[in-house]
Image (cartoon, rainbow, N blue to C red; front, side, top):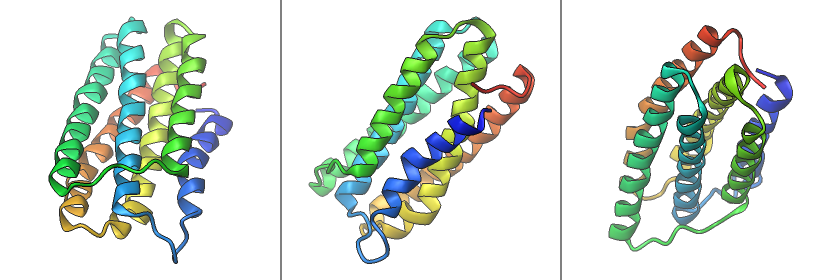
Length: 177
């Protein structure tokens, strides 16, 4: 994967999170917005990949992203409703959305194996960045025990997605846009 793309994905997630700093960790409402946005960005990319790819393996992976991230958003939605929390947009959720929109715009210009490599390469960087955010900011900052438990519960799926994406990346030939 191209280093510029990898760094832009990391920056879109971690730099806005760093703005919270130690004194002002994200609130549960802000974490909820980050979680929902991060999952929706991956659902949107998976939907595009599912429609565009000719590769059965990439199509299967894209469908897994749609299904799994949709399930996380459904669980998060039920939890915030139960807790009476309204997700609060913030610099991180907004940066994630912009990054997702930029990724879709770039992917829409590609086709064939070039599309597959760019999509999968982005998925590798995205899942690594989300895991870093979960471990370093979101899980430690969550105040509500149920929210924290949900974040901990879904973390292994992100690890599996990262491993799956890396495997696909290798199959596609060191991929990336």
